[in-house]
Amino acid sequence: MFLFQPAHSIRRITMRSTWLSRSFLKQQFGFSVEILFFLGETSDDYEPQSILYKSEIYKDIVQSSFIDSYHSNTHTCT
Image (cartoon, rainbow, N blue to C red; front, side, top):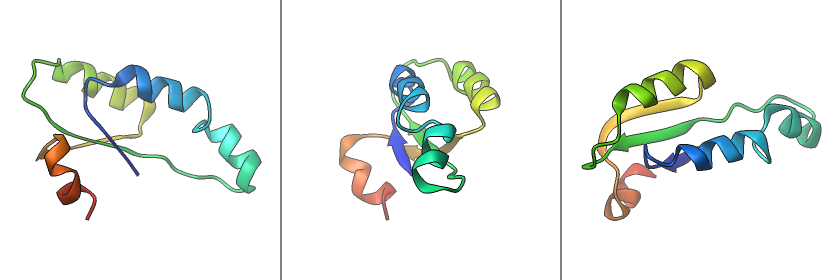
């Protein structure tokens, strides 16, 4: 499970294409591993349609109604 701000799409793309790629993980562990990115809401104006679009493409994004901030990390990780 990885917690990311919605605007960090470049980081998610990089991770998907490198050490979190399904083929790399299967090669390393010998079985399939499912990766999910959990996104909260933010106060910035990041386009929600972009998240929906990327969620449909990659099928690895879960967005919830918690406020995604540094101070809420302890609440979102439990």
